Length: 263
Image (tube, rainbow, N blue to C red; front, side):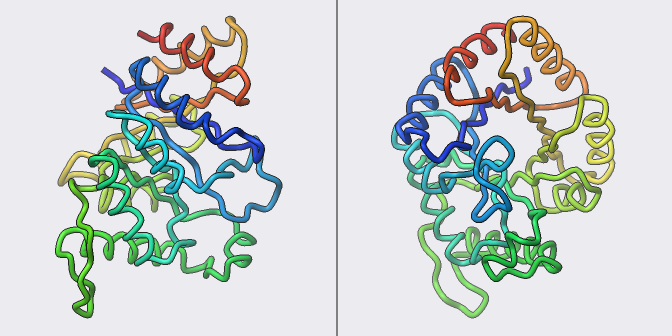
């Protein structure tokens, strides 16, 4: 069965932070497998529908972890080359332990050169920096030692799965090489199926779970279309589908309606 997942609303700066915990507890009750948060530090426009990620995802997921018991927690996706690698490793390992091993680290390379310039990060070398950071995380999490011999703790209580986001063949190769899952970005089911087939051809040594994301924020007629899309992604090879339910007002009602409609 395809996992039903939830993208938490993180677009509005005036969102009541308690809603993250309330929605996550509801998602747990309704049978959603995971909740996800996006990431932006300094996007090119105001935070909102286009540029999500108002609240920092790792800090927010620690809050969600304390408010829930079993639901998976993930970043969708963290812009990895904007982060200092050693501090990130400490944050991820700590959150994994605090949550009882529920964290999935979703990563991407980013797309906005202005955001990189604002924080003093190299845009052109972001792909190489992403690969280097993933290799460092793997080393620290499995050996507990830095490249020069320094000691790293805490060790994650369980292996932290890596999700790689992006539609390019480069992203698919990174997912095949270093990921446990791959997340499409804005693809319809037919395009998703093509990219999933390409991923399967690249990931010959071990399976990588293809995951899709979609949105529903409309009325009953649009719900029927969204449910059809959900099943179309499943037929196209998605192991999981994460849904965003639009503006935070009414989010709970749409979560309930969609979960009931797809089961």
